[in-house]
Length: 249
Image: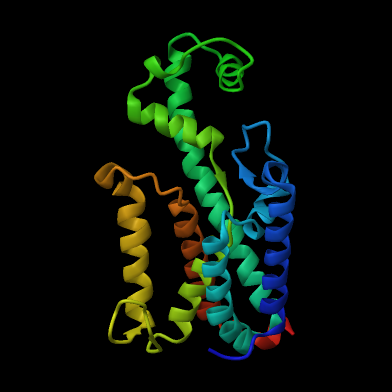
């Protein structure tokens, strides 16, 4: 924990302003600024950026902003403003890229089955948008239909993808830093906590959690994985090529 740094402070302010604005405007704000599947008519080209400033509730934004302050200020202090902002935005964009790629796979998988049964892509989308009559559910098995629908209609909001990138970067730079974790009586070193947390929460429960527990989490686990993956790749590249802060100032 340290004093808040300039870019982190500005990011927190922007997130809070977006959150307050969303509370005032309501659903139209989500329709415009949340990340929609590119095949969905609600998709706009700015959503890969704006989605990371949107949040789904008080707990969501509170957790993300606390993590941004806790880890982001330390990283910005050592990196400088430009390098930190580049890393943060890159991880956020990487998160939505991976999540969209997974959704594209599920959508195309279901679409190919429907097209093999005589539907055109245009007809399927017309049915999904309520512009044509039809029931697609009987044509796909239950889990495939569920993933197909979630891929098309699902939205992504939140800074979590970028935050996961920050967690990876923190573990890279300060592997032996001891983190005090709620409900765990002893501090855990970052090099252990970050990978174990991600593998358990997003790797295992993110992929198998709903089917094992019967609970709809509403958490974009693949976006988390994407943010962490891009964070790891950027840190690996910087370490390999000795990119230091002086190159960014």
